[in-house]
Length: 357
Ligand code: P6P
Image (cartoon, rainbow, N blue to C red; front, side, top):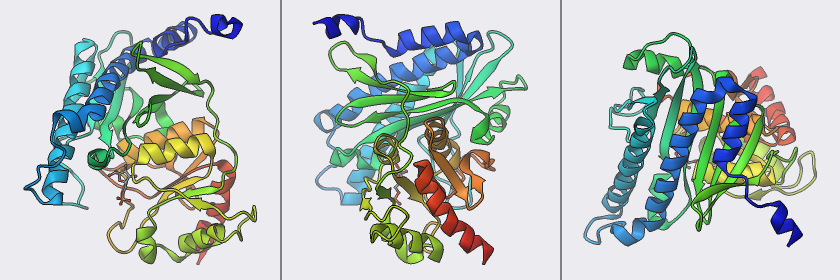
């Protein structure tokens, strides 16, 4: 009973943000972004967890691909709408949706995700956020975890033009002021890097509040799990293939044989890596993914920001942190390697070997 009394009332995300803004008043504009994202994530969590009940996940007559895209498309679009409205209804955010994929890697198609939200100028500072409403939505049909990802930059030149907002976010992730994700899985967990710490909050289904469950989340310095799509291994650079072969056969620095875990939903794979340690990679391959398969701006960069704030490391190349790479286009993809500091350091030795040849 004594322990229970000490933890009443639980620390919620709202209470955490109020305290943080007291400490750092310049984050006040950020607070409205966070509260809007939190509200949207509660709604998206309900949509995701009820997807199979309210919508046929794939109509029987359609082939797999049509069925998949039908439910993915619907959940993607609903999540984007929910997030867009939550941001707008704060009355403090302006939202743009770069709808058409701009990169040359794939034909121009409607990209359902990727919102860019600007907190309206309250004081002299204003923030611009990039948001991936539902990463991994293709897995939703199979009830595999999905997630919302966001990253926040401070906007220097004040302009509301869409082009100016896009330019305001084409920045290296190291310039972010905050980032985080919400994982929709057996539980709904929101992990937020704000200031120099990472905090994890679990949605209480009864109170509908995000409650602090992972205070000052820190990634173990070493793990024994590697997470990547081995189906691409034939096309990997030799150095990366050699690294994976070494750790999976127990010939790496720890002498331990690493286990392979790959959900195929980035937020789930990286959340597990944050909690248990290890390494998550999406390298380039010479088959289908010349730059990996993760968009830098609104997928791997915000996640890398969280991983590094939690004491881990993230690389884009042999000698470049993912946080120092400037996206050239909104949908640009870039290789990524992130996780426990010692595991990334071990991989880096192989990548450096490759780049020196
Ligand atoms: P692949 C999901 O579509 C996603 O964007 C990430 O969540 C995930 O890590 C990656 O793509 C999976 O890509 O090529 O392994 O299917």
